[in-house]
Length: 158
Image (cartoon, rainbow, N blue to C red; front, side, top):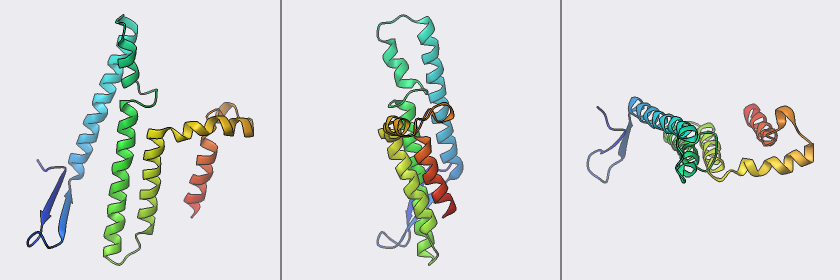
């Protein structure tokens, strides 16, 4: 089995570094982590209804995929960070080949922003001000989708 990441120095340590990523290993690692998160969430749901331990709510909140600032959120933020790093790597490879890496660096920036946003809950801070300003409800109850949607449309047409 191939490692997730291996770095081979070509012709000694002073030469260029070769980076080999195995997509299958990366996919299987991420799928395994997702499986662990799903199983932990199911255990939390079961514990909520069947266990009466005094501190069980702390465990449930830690693994609940429907809340923020916990293990599933950490995974989500980490996955977007990895995506950002891989996109930046592709952009760098394009620049080395004298091709335009701008779209790849742009996507890397978007993913690093989303990673930071996921871990800091910045989008949640927008709900109140946007909802009060635009008087949103219904489909736009989670009002943060409006400014993020506008940015997505602008970036998508660029």
